[in-house]
Structures are given as C-alpha cells and as structure tokens.
Image 1 (cartoon, helix red, strand yellow):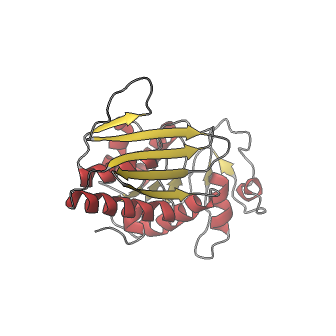
Image 2 (cartoon, helix red, strand yellow; image 1 turned 90 degrees about the vertical axis):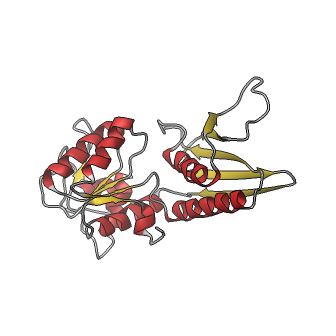
Length: 253
C-alpha cells in the first residue's frame, strides 16, 4: 500500500509526497521512496520517522505502528487518515481521543466502491426492516493469504451498519457441527484467505422465496490508495474531529 500511495500520489498535480515512513528494520530503509515504488527518484528517503512539515499523514500499517503514528500526529498537530484495521479496543479509543485535537478520517476501507456498497447495504437493511421482511444476513469476505485479522474490518463495519438498521444483536463466525436452527437475530461472518486477493465482500440478504446480494470486488490495491489520497486532501482542510469516508465522499447524512 505504501508503494501505491507513493506512486499514485506522485502522479497527482495537487499532491506532493513529503515523507515515507517504514519500520526501522525494513530492508529498504534509506532508499528513495520513488525508486522503491517504481516511479523514479523523488528525493524522498524512506525513514523510520518523519520530521518535516506535513499537511496530512496516511497510515496503512499494523496496529502497533498505527498507535505510534497517532501519538506523533497529535503531538505535532498533523491531520491523520487512519486506514489500518485490526485495532484493539484500546487503540480505537486512542483514535477517538486524538480526534478531539486533530482532524482524523477513520474508516475500515478507503475504497469508493466499498463505501458506496456500505450505503446500499444500510439502505437495504432499513428497507427490509421497515416492511417487515424476514431476512437472514450473511457476510462473506475474501482476502489475500497475508492478511492477519479476520473477519476484515470492512466486513465488520458492513455488519455494524446493517445491525443498526435491522436490530441483530448476535454474530457468528463460520459454522461447524450441528449449531442448530439459525437464530433470527444474528449476522454470520465468513472469512476466506486465498492467494493474492486484494479484497472482496458479499452481503447476502436471504428471505423465503428470494435472495438479494451485494458484492464489491477490488481487482488491485489502487482503489484503496486513491481513496486514501482523497481522504488526505479532505482531512487537511477540516477542523479537529472524527470523520469517515462518508464525509469524504459527501455521503454523510
């Protein structure tokens, strides 16, 4: 993701890559970020920390690093785009606390298509609930073999949006053995890890006699980078507060 952010950001005339940060043990530390991203030299060295003036920071890392980046942004008053998933309850609380002093865009997915599908999923749940439809909801997500958290943060957020509209209070993660008749008040999650799949989510609304499915797929990681760069442009102009991709895309109610 870092390489795609650098590559796409460097090609946008409205943006300037000002820093590239990696783990202190990374083998490309000290290398020109543009060369690492395959777009030619940019004069920006990959470093273990940032010490230049920045309009915004995008974090696509791991929870431990995300926590450190959040603290650094708060200390320096830098707007933050938090795209790292798998955060603990404590790390999530840290982001909410940070938003009291800096603007933060925090979302489980930066993808335009994913966020539009989330809006559709919430609308579907609201409509089915309001008309009394008896619908079962199952969420199936596929990602590459290297993804460490399951189910994905995006899948969980789909479930949160739907539960808000339909009232499910339980969740199950996969099924085996004889779990019995499906409870009416649960959402089922199923995580698939295969090859280099960059991300795929299917939300199934199953009713008696008919089924509605919403599916969104990424063919490569550029969709996440493009969304994160748009989020950076948005957050750099905002006052302190917690924002989502719905705010970035003008979908917030």
